[in-house]
Image 1 (tube, rainbow, N blue to C red):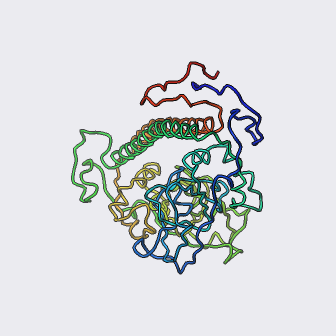
Image 2 (cartoon, rainbow, N blue to C red):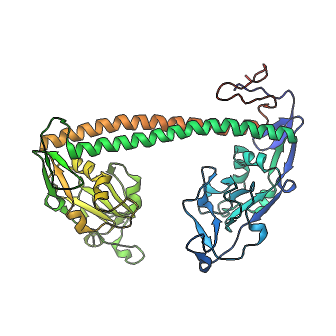
Image 3 (cartoon, rainbow, N blue to C red):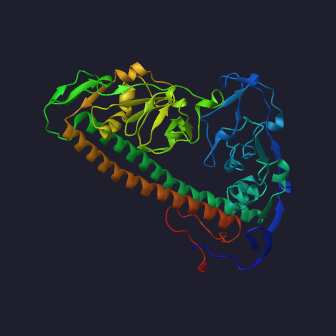
Length: 451
């Protein structure tokens, strides 16, 4: 790293941190501020919108170390003044079914000030929070959070939180470190955002290539004709357009539950029973499923032999895949069997979101009906063209996937850099007292560097 170290250090007993700058202190959080557990409320207190109540900040309102407001709950209930969030408070997840989320946090800003927070959350309130917010997002804090989690305890109590030990520099140095980290992490965050935008554009371009190939073909000079389908527009003159029910046997499964009919299930059964969670984990091909059916159970739902195409029809609409195992399907799926066109071509065609948008559906809607799927229009090139289109799509997709993977790796490296920089600054491994921001270029630092 290009930043210099402090000249003198002293011993410290903070787990993996065994030394801090000589003039720093070790302080427990209880001496720096107060930890508060959030508001308890009942379902009867929940209202529909903010005009009727106050927003309750929950775990879902903390995303990537920032506040998010995509999933909100409002309550109509008197909120004690101490449970009204104040600007600068640090909001933490104190209890959650997922251990990985315990301790995730974000600082309350002007927008969130005045809201309250739920009983599974905590607030740490302190005049030191501009600096402590950096410490709370460092490995030092994460390691102490993890030390209180056991096989039976999945929470971070206010007592635990107050007992955390923090390396604390003098006031002016805290401000310098906070300013340094704000400046440097903002630059890293900007680069991360640009990579995220690139990934979004690459995915959109990848989808556009697929959509164009299965609706317009690969020959830009091919004579075209009106398909008679509004969303398709023109298609190559020699292509057919048929309703899906004429190119496949299309059925729907049934809901089977082990709790209702345990005799339908057998972990050694020949037929798998597909559910939505299985589909979300697979890409193009489905190789496994959590549940297996008994011989009796396999007669109670639609059987789908390997190498057919299946789409999700509830929860998430239009997720397509090809099953490589024998499955019976939940009624949240619609399988296409006994195919009269190439399965790989149909897979790509059914992966086209414009198809479902034309039906008035989006991938967040809850259901698509069997008759809607049977009557959907499908473009049918010649057999040879179907194979050529599949080859072109999968070659193009591989190129886009490689670029997306490279961008994801870059994001991961930048996130690691961000975490390492915060950790180094708040544990005293680097000395930024003489740092000065000079924009996007190099920072002015003393000539003595860490090796």
